[in-house]
Image 1 (cartoon, rainbow, N blue to C red):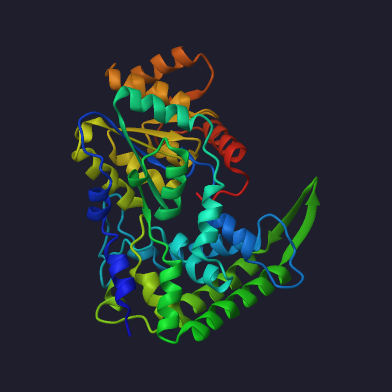
Image 2: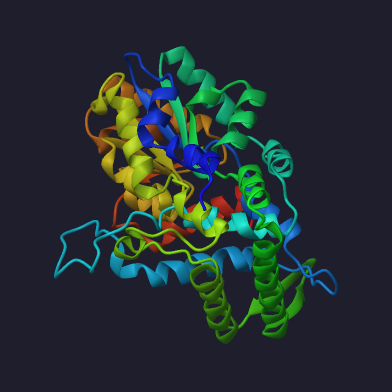
Length: 408
């Protein structure tokens, strides 16, 4: 049993197709930026999980929420399972794993939310509504309009679902919707496929049973207390391990999802949901880098590429771009050539102007920007030598702008 609609949807997500549709050709500089963080403050998948994943009765609203815990622990469980299959970023030591390496762990936290949101009755219109609530990062519009005057092109590259953010871009008017490149999230197509093949009730029952067990674990192995006006939840380490085991049973044993290349070769997952999750081509760490480089090659060339991001899943893109800015995120600042801590993205525009002027190396650019900004933002050299003090400044600003719980 396979569904041609889902097959066609996922095949259309090839990186080349995304680049072809971006209409980003032309001479000049390109800013390839993460969307969530540098451009918009929301994380609408995490927000939907928080709002809709909770017990039907007796739910205890606290931070982190049920949905946030499920989101984070599922990702950690999966990351542990495929640790040996990740292609190393440095020099490989020893033999590769049986069956080869996989890129499929990238972006899985997003696609793994799909079965849970379907089970909670979330539809695509709800996700679009959540996305449209995302506020622009302060100064992002001014930065975008300034780049347009300079003749720059700007593309937003995100692991998040592409289509809701294209709607956000269309609404805001300062980011071309076709230049938002992101992941699929086939909620409506998945439901149609399951219903068409008579699998909806059976496979939703698996997802709902997983959620009931997960909620019971969280409630049974947590302490909740008031911290001022905030209700806090501490989920025990023993509870985390049990939840990860339950996650593995749901995704690996019940849905039949595998990301081991040797396992997947010549077989289909036994469930429709499993096949949809496996087939969805996510925009992850390395594909973000590939998209940025491909877009740059179609315009002014890779030498005129600047990458910008605020999270660990932007690190590969930041490392591979000739110029890069890690903004309001310690993992991003460690990967980038330049670190920026700011509550106004127009400060990044100052950086981009000096990069365009070709004043010299990174240190020369930083010196000119510091002089112009005169303390309005923190600008520093990025890289592995980031001090604990700088790391904390990045964390504090990220929490200030995006809230206490940020996935990346």
